Structures are given as C-alpha cells and as structure tokens.
Length: 320
Ligand code: SIN
Image 1: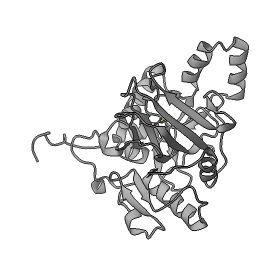
Image 2: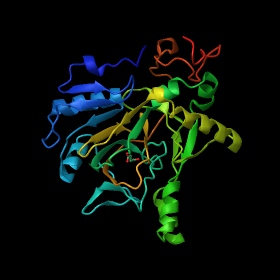
Image 3: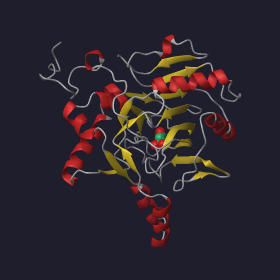
Image 4: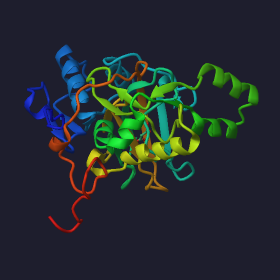
C-alpha cells in the first residue's frame, strides 16, 4: 500500500488545501476562523490533519477566545504546568522571544510526552514574527519509522521508553523552585513509559514516538545500547525528505498532530522578537499494536542516500 500519496487533493474537501511536501504539511484555504466551524468543516479538518500531519492557515486575525474555540472542536484543552500563559487564559501558552530571551525551542520534539496522556495536537498562532527567520520545521514520524533500517525496527518494535520533563526542571530550579516543590511536581507528573513506536489511534499507522527533548532511555536495554538506538531514532527527524517548513507571518496558524509528527522552531532571528501562542489539545494514552498499514519500501518516494533497508549502497550523490 502506498500511504504517501497526496490524498487530500482528490478527496473533495469543503476547503482548498495546498500540500507543502510529499507526505507532510498542507495550507488550508477558504476557512475563516473568526466564524464558528460547521460540522462538515470540523470533520474535513480532522481528515486533512490525519493525512497531512500539520495544517497551516494564513491571515487569521482571531482573538484568544476564537483560538480556544477553534481548538475545542478537536478535544479538551490542557493547562501547561511549567510554561507561562496569557493573562486570564491558562490554556493559552505564551511563547515570547526577544533580545533578552532568545528562542529555545530548537530541538526536535512532540509536545508534552512527559505526560501520562500526551497531546493529540497543538495549535500555534503567530502574534509577531521576526523580519526573517523563526520558521518552524515539521517531520513526519510515519516516514521516519517506515524508512528505518530493518535491524533497528526489529530492535524497537514493542519496546517502551521513559520520558521526563527534564528541560523544565532546569528552568524551575533557576526560577527558585524549592526541593519540596520539585518533589511535588515529580509526584503530580510521574515519568510515563510510552511505546518507542506508537500506533496512531485514528490511522492505525506506526510512527517513532521518542524525542530528544523528553525521552530518557529505552526500558530493557543497557545505557550504551539505549543511547545508541535513541540517537538513530532522533536522527530520523532530521532528514529533509520527511519534513516541511513553515514561514510565519502575523496571524498565521499551524495545527499539528503530535501523535504523527515532531517539530523544531529555528532559533536564527536574535535579536528580533518572535511571539506565538499555543493551545494544546489533550490526547490519550499511547499504545503499540503489532502490524497495521505500512508503505511498502518499493513504493516509497524516498530514494538515494537515505539510510534504510538496502542490500547495496545507494547511488552516488552526483550520478543518476
Ligand atoms: C513549540 O515547540 O511548541 C513551539 C513551536 C514554535 O514556536 O514554532
């Protein structure tokens, strides 16, 4: 089965969509997020999100309330316990960078995997973009999984890994959190064990579900082997073939599926300002199921020097 086909363009959706790359990203056209969405629009957006993994919107001059309302069409919203939020709106996480607070989200990750039930998806709205830079990249975790070397896939199928809110610990301590407060956080947010390869609850497809920001180790492996395998899995996100890249403008929105992709906010715009707000939709407990749909390797669009299962080395960079 070729799951990489761009199905959105032929589905007959109630809005237009322009794909950003072969398997990931699509810009939605013909929806005004200041208006309540119809059931048909919500259903089509869900479908497009599952297919494209991240949807982009332009020129959406919406209020915070409209941002929250849009997100509530897709589930309940979480309150981030460690990150700042917009005054009076605890579900609206404010991510603000400027000369004194340079960008820090430049690591591949899926949101809040340190939770027992991590996020379904996140909706990010741009209030101010730098004159150049500050793009966000997204990487397709199904493609990353399907193109792993066979030996690595065999090692990680059915394995679980421990996640932790480590980056926030550093920040909390720097903000003066006491050891008692840290112990309370540990109790409220115990380290979850999530499958290394996650079955998507809606598509049934499998994708890599470990990330460099929050995953600590793979259970049942010694440290050296776990570090080595995790490094290989993290590396998969960095192949441009599996990615798309979004250039922000004021009033742009990105809506991504945290169960199917990872993201990386480039931090190349200092000393300029970049201000975005994120609303995060609560997801369910990740699980792994053997089998499920997969793109056959001979139908994969990804060729050349990608390190996947291959008997002979890939072609030279410069020859056909
Ligand atoms: C995030 O990591 O959730 C923020 C991404 C961004 O600022 O582009």
